[in-house]
Amino acid sequence: MLELKNVSAGYGPLQILWGISLKVDTGEFVSLVGPNGVGKTTCLKTIAGMIKITEGEILFNGIDISNMYVPDITKQGLSFVTEGGCLFAGMTVHENLRLGAYILKDKKQIAELEGFVFSLFPRLAEREKQLAGTLSGGERKMLSIARGLMSAPKILLVDEPSLGLAPNLVDDVFDTLVTLNKEQGLTIFLVEQNVHTTLEITDRTYVIEQGRICLQGKSGDLLNNDHVKSCYLGLT
Ligand SMILES: Nc1ncnc2c1ncn2[C@@H]1O[C@H](COP(=O)(O)OP(=O)(O)OP(=O)(O)O)[C@@H](O)[C@H]1O
Ligand SMILES: [Mg+2]
Image 1 (spheres, helix red, strand yellow):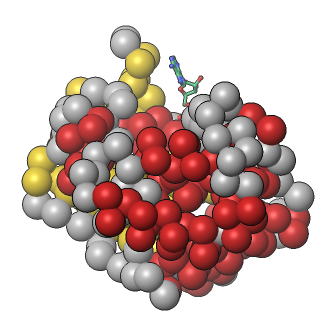
Image 2: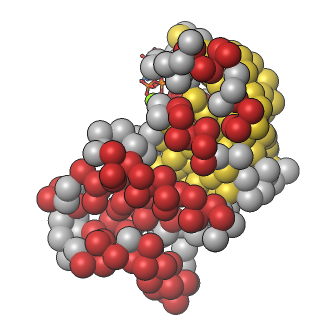
Image 3: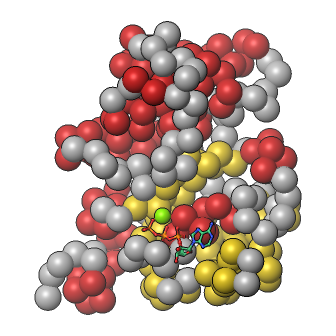
């Protein structure tokens, strides 16, 4: 479904990603983990079309989306839930959700999607008319994921959904992602710092260090990998 072939990218003269190759197949739940500042968010932004690539190509369902405009990539079926959520604080939950569906024209489909995300996050349904800026941190996280789903994506890219959440809310967010993947068949590419849980819930994982993929494999196998154990799981 999604394939990066030898992708390099960065910010102006500052190169961050060095020849990244990775693949996410239809229906898979794949993650990208690594230390701070190594290029995880940059990788997601590059896939979503927010950063130009300098080398390589990005294929999405066989179509070269490298350097396509963001709305065109969204129309192909790719949705990116950013770390901060990028919500419009002065707009209501309902209005933020409608913005997530900006590429869709069919009103019935939009209403159905809204019904679906409200069934996934009943707390949002209760707060439909509340301004996004007044939601709690956990509710904002739910809204950012819900808004990402409103474009009816084939793949959801999610950047650090657990960041800043209390442990019980982290579990809720991970449970939601697992439900979306297992029950709705949604393909997910997740960036996370919570490596242990990520390895438990995903199918495959790539480890990125200094802008390069240094390790990859089935998530369950990586739980027993010595490098992963010592560097990411605090085990010696
Ligand atoms: N807009 C920008 N302009 C210049 N440099 C940037 C920009 N955004 C990020 N960087 C730099 O690119 C590098 C990689 O950043 P990135 O956000 O991709 O890291 P990350 O792996 O997501 O880190 P974290 O785990 O802390 O979120 C960092 O050194 C960062 O300072
Ligand atoms: Mg990041």
